[in-house]
Length: 62
Image 1 (cartoon, rainbow, N blue to C red):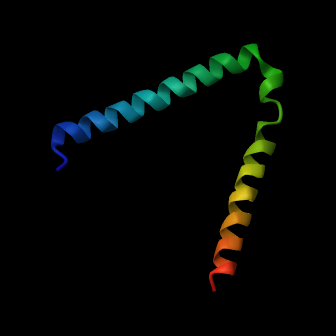
Image 2 (cartoon, one colour):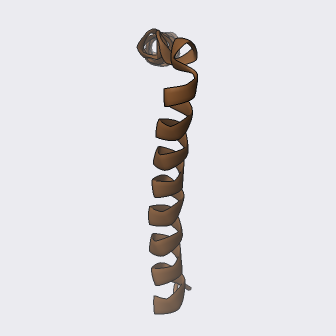
């Protein structure tokens, strides 16, 4: 199913994609600092919503 060539291509693609995203984010962050000021609050809110959803799902299916 997965040949060696496909695995190598996938790993290479993921590494290059992540490196490009990090480069793009760091370059954009220098120019627009106020957009990224409270990004950690959004991350915490997303994690909280997922945790609440998971808790309710497990609680309601008991």
